[in-house]
Length: 187
Image 1 (spheres, helix red, strand yellow):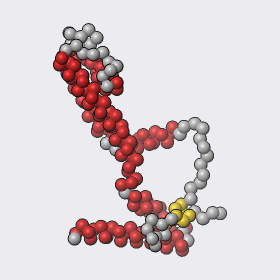
Image 2 (tube, one colour; image 1 turned 90 degrees about the vertical axis):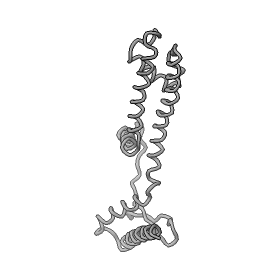
Image 3 (cartoon, rainbow, N blue to C red; image 1 turned 120 degrees about the horizontal axis):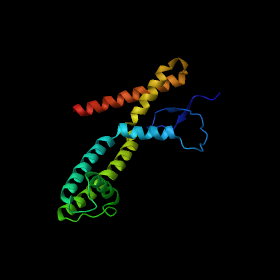
Image 4 (spheres, helix red, strand yellow; image 1 turned 135 degrees about the horizontal axis):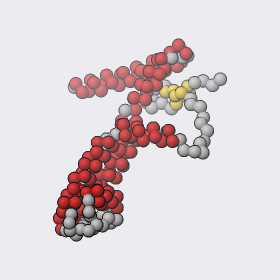
């Protein structure tokens, strides 16, 4: 039986780092739908995607109302508030080129501002949220180490002497680094 841990090149001189071996996975032909949904849920839960999206929806409704009130009765293709919301969605997705154009000057100004602002907010929210999601592990790399230490502490009886010494050294290094950061803040 293989050892459950394998050595990893150290981060700092003198450190001993180990990682747990993972079983090899087979290549999937079909997409991993639960895995994809898990990533999407994680992005929604751990990034500012929902607050930005809610701001986007409120602004869409406000700009659509402004467009509706300035174009109602003047523009034949804009008969209802629903049509104005549809125009707002089309303007946001196509930067104003796919939707019918307003006929009043005020409607053109509202439409133009919304086309630029909506596009920036929508695509900015998507890109910023995905980027923030993939940056999460870089913010606190010690979080993964602490999780590994907690896992090993829970199954301490199964660890060898070498693994216990490595666990002790890793915990000591994390605590000493934190003590140094606290001391630097107070000096």
